[in-house]
Image (cartoon, rainbow, N blue to C red):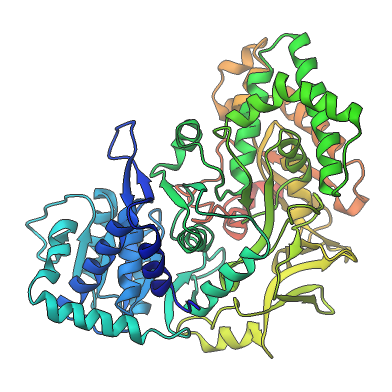
Length: 596
């Protein structure tokens, strides 16, 4: 039985040999090239032997900062095969973040993708006491930096005394143990510096085993890879595709994913809620241009699809009449919606943040099975997800096989199993705080329903307590308000305050389309949100949305903001989580005004 990632790769290469394992685009070309299993393993070995040639022993930490591409995975697996440790960094990371991670891991070598990422690595080489080599995937020739080695030249380093290096590599592969460290993945750090979660071979192999008992993934499947490989979700999924013999198609630029899906035609792919939020907004914008009769057909089809999918979620059969209606709805509308995703989707794993149940129901109505789940870096991704036959749209799915999940007296979610991480790198105190008696204390508040479905309500540290002593979940408020088509982003505020307020970013494209009959649509964002008519428009919508909230949960006042929260302006982490504390600090003046 396989017990490590490299043994898995070698075994599957002997099985699949010339079949496609990866597909990718070169530069701006529209066609996809392919890489076979044999070519992948050959390149993985070249990476390992090159590291040996550079004097790397074992258990050393090596970085990767790049957009998604085949070389990312080749470097990743090559580092692992040489029994060293991969430290992935987000291509959007700041220099300060990169230096912090590099210093803590004493990184000696880093792989980089393009010129922008190389510039960060070059700066790091000037400001780090340990970095000796920069390996560039793109052909970046920098005569001013003798640490820089282009990818092709790097791969040739193992050619000298190749037989000896091959023996050394084979010895290292044979010596890999299940408990050997594979990677240190740094969490996004919404507050303070990030922490490096240590994951070993056993954790990944256990993740594959429990997923095989839950979902359908075969060698016939094709996945589109567009979430960052530096994140545990896409990285574990990529390993899992290799484990099951599927083909992975790299989409280097995430902004192009929607245009590429009809070309790639994936059968499955990892996603985050934001992907569906933006897709839904685009569908609604397009719908707004239609005639009333066409809108009615669309709405009827979605309603019919919803009735059908609700029965499916309970493993119940539709009546002959509903089945007939569903076939008509599928011809008229639903299959056209599925074509947005390439038309071949079986299911789409989705996690990383809260998603509106109404959004889940919409896409399931169209026949897009969003397999929503809950997980963490510290649990090698998935803790729970939908089963294929029984699922509840208002939950994060059922707990994965072989994992134990419970909640303590404070409602904190606790997890035990072979996929739970080994602790934080060089942070024993923080590790001991959240790893107790074999349980991982997630920091998330939730509950398990009598049917065994997991519900995650909020981050415990994010829970607000009003000055009146009432606890309020900001995620509950944000998820509800965020489903409004005119609201792009929102954060709720109210800790130690007398009532709840909110910072709201309008969905400006949708808003301008709605008000095109007025002169307002020509105004810039800042001028637009200052108009009393616009403020009143949002006031009415927000009040309507929260009618069923208890009084202490309701947003009493809000401020409209002119720009969205992004990674670039620092308000989102690399995993698209809102830096709540930073935003509250940045907009302190506006927030204080709402309590006068």
